[in-house]
Image (cartoon, rainbow, N blue to C red; front, side, top):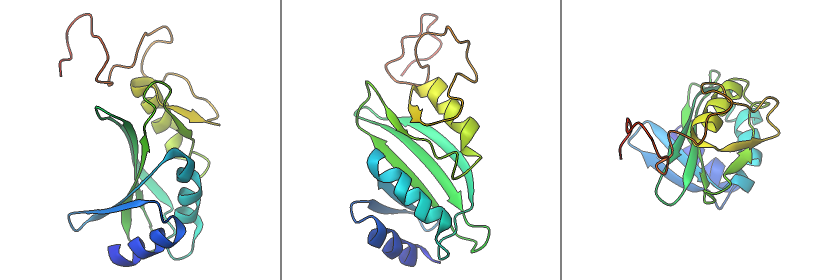
Length: 153
């Protein structure tokens, strides 16, 4: 499935999704937290898309919002795309876990929680994975105060 066909399929499933092509490689679908789970399930289980492999999950801190970015691949159909969820609430950022859809998301979600403070609802083991349990703050957030001044923006 090429990007244009994929774009039409996603637009039919989720008309509110923002669809952006990034160069010629990746189609980006940007959704809000309430839209994420239903679209992820369709992308994973629909025979036409069959995105069976999530090969990267990242957190991003923008000045006005946070984002979780999922890079997806279909090993059956040999196509790829990027699914992004835009989180407006920086004070209490949260989305549903997708680790029951893509098992590779489990540890990636823990890392994003640890470094950005984004909570993943219904995650089976959401706790810090890199930093000590008593660590204060989220070091990859732009509002993080680094007392040693190792990180500057």
